[in-house]
Amino acid sequence: MLNQLTPEHEAVRATLKRYIAEKINPFVDEWEKAEIFPAHQVFKGMGDLGLLGLDKPVENGGGGLDYSYAAVMAETLADINCGGIPMATGVQTDMATPALAKHGSAELRAEFLAPAIAGDYVACLGVSEVGSGSDVASVKTTARKDGDDYIINGGKMWTTNGTQADFCCVLANTSDGASHRNKSLIVVPMKAKGVSVARKLQKVGMDSSDTAQLYFDEVRVPQRYRIGEEGKGFMYQMEQFQMERLWGALNACAGAQRAIDVTIEYTRERKAFGRSLLDNQWIHYTLAELQTEVEALRSLAWRGVEMVVQGRDATQLATMAKLKAGRVARQTADGCLQFWGGMGYVMDSPINRMWRDARLCSIGGGADEVMLQVLCKFMGTFPKG
Image (cartoon, rainbow, N blue to C red; front, side):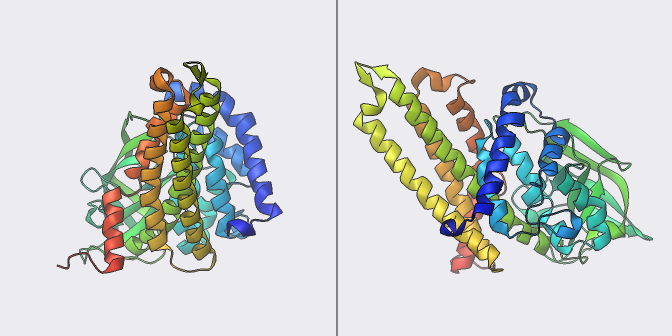
């Protein structure tokens, strides 16, 4: 697939690079200090350029292109001088809206997907809970029927874009059946009565991305806000995880490449004991090892992209790529930071921010251990019962 990228793919990359250079990177330091970025402003600019719906339906304002274009965007977002804004954008394009685009009714897509693609609405995803992080089947949020409505009670945790979102795609239990068949995905407007942001979470990294804990207290929404069929929410979310995991792998891979590139530049210019740091064999050999890991990850992730484009189930490869990405991101950022010496420990150095932001990749979107569990099930080695 990497060899099949067209001038159209590169045009998308160039457009996004230009927008990042002109409208995002000059303000990133300010937004990092504020621990929030203006999502509506940034997303509206992306929406005006047609970047928020590259692979979404044309009838909702999307580009109608295949997933490889969204993959190019996931990589290019690593040009942003932080991890929080790319992650928030990925939630908008590849985590909160794929199920809505694929399974939502025409009316629901017109009401919520179209303004998300235009950048007029900010989306968030309500899956994880305080007691149910990576264990999606154990979520406790409920949605009971009352006439033509659902009444939603519960809460969600670690919700990216949560303080600024216009709507949340919420996974909730809609019956008392088996845990894999009793859940539905429901669009919940954040202005609905009973929705509250309990708190904005302060994190180790991803500072400019707002992350919230949400509560739902007798929140009434029409049943027509349900995405697809009742009871199929778990399955829809598993499908959606393919996009989330591939997005994470592609973006983390490009971020690791950036860490290597800036470290080569820094160690070439930095002198110690009469020569460039880069001339030390340990440093240039280590960077070569890290570069090899990045290339291996890139190939794995793009194999997953190719499967999605072909309409095949990429869950296994996407899970492998997500697992590998978390480890490569951590190894690369930490290894590169060491070569920056004291400057690497200074918070406003670029490698320090990469180091802090990269740590999330092994936790968010399913921890490494959950990725291993999924892979063991594919291999038939996971204990039964």
